[in-house]
Picture 1 (tube, rainbow, N blue to C red):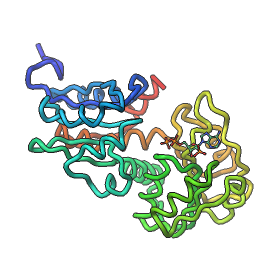
Picture 2 (picture 1 turned 90 degrees about the vertical axis):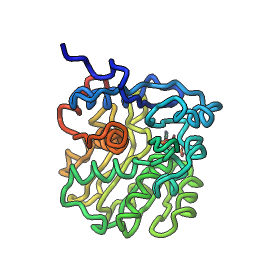
Picture 3 (picture 1 turned 135 degrees about the horizontal axis):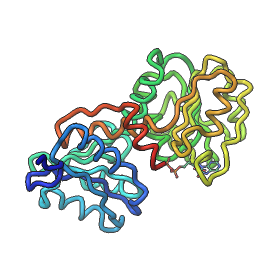
Amino acid sequence: MTIPGGFTGAAVVAGVCGWPIKHSRSPRIHNYWLRQYGIDGVYVPFAMPPEGAKDAIRMLPALGIRGMNVTVPNKEEAYKAMDEVDRWAQRLKAVNTIVVRDGLLYGANTDAFGFLESLRKAQPGWRADAGPVVVLGAGGAARAIVAGLQDEGAPEIRIANRTPERAAAIRDEFGKPVRPILWEQRADALGDAALLINTTSLGMEGQPALDIDLAELPATSVVYDIVYAPLETPLLVAARARGNSAIDGLGMLLHQARPGFREWFGTDPVVDQELRNHVLAVL
Ligand code: ATR
C-alpha cells in the first residue's frame, strides 16, 4: 500500500498564516502540488491573530515547521520577525514567504515575481520598455506590481487611486518612474499606455464593477486584472471585446506560490491548466 503524502512522521510541514485564513486558496494550490509530485509533506492553514503574529512566527524553527506563506494582515509583522530578507521584502517592507534555514527565519516577497511571471507566460513578447503603464489602485498589491515593473525598466508608471495620498506615497518611496494621476483622470491617461493594470478590488464578486472608459486605449495594449473571482471581470470582457489582450488574476496567485514550494519541498512546481482548473473549482 502506498502511504499518501503527509501521513508519515517524516512529513515536511509548511502552511499559510493570516486572519481570517479560511478563504485562502494557498492550501489548495500547495496540497495539489504535493500530491502531484508524490511528496511526503503537508501544507496547513494557520488562523493567526495579528497581535500575536510576530511571536508565533519566531516560534517556527522551534516547532520544526519548514516555512510559511503570510497573508493579510500579517505581512508587515512577519517582515519585522525575520532574521534576513530578500530585496523584494526589503523594498516592500512586507513578507509573504518565510523559509526556515539553519534555525533562522528568511523572508521573501514573491508577489512581484508572481506578477511578472504570469505576465510573461501570458504575453511572451512583453517588454517593460514598450510604453507607459497605468496602474489603478495603490494598496499592497499595487506596491508589489510597481516595484516589479520599475525593476524591469518600465519608463513611466502612472498610478490612479481613489485616495490620492496613497499614490503619492508610492511615488515618494519609489521615485522615478512613478507618476500619480487623479482617479477622475484615469481614462485620459490611457492614450499611449502599453499596459493597464487593475489592482483595486473593483470587479471582484460582491463589489461594483470598475468604471473606466477604454476608448483611448491603443489596440495593441495589454489589460491585466489582478481580480480572480470572477476570472472574467467586466474590465477584461470590455478589453477583449475591443481586441485588447486580457490577462486574469489567477496566474499571479499561482506563480507567487512557486518559490515557497521549491524552498520547502525541493521541487520547482509547474503552473498548468490542470492546476488552474483545480483552483477554479472552488472560486
Ligand atoms: P491590496 O493589499 O489587496 O492591494 P488594499 O490595500 O485594501 O488591498 O487596496 C485596495 C485598493 O482598491 C485601493 O487602491 C483602494 O483605494 P483606496 O486606497 O482609495 O481605498 C481600491 N478601492 C477599493 N474600493 C474602491 C472603490 N469603491 N473605488 C475606487 N477604489 C477602490
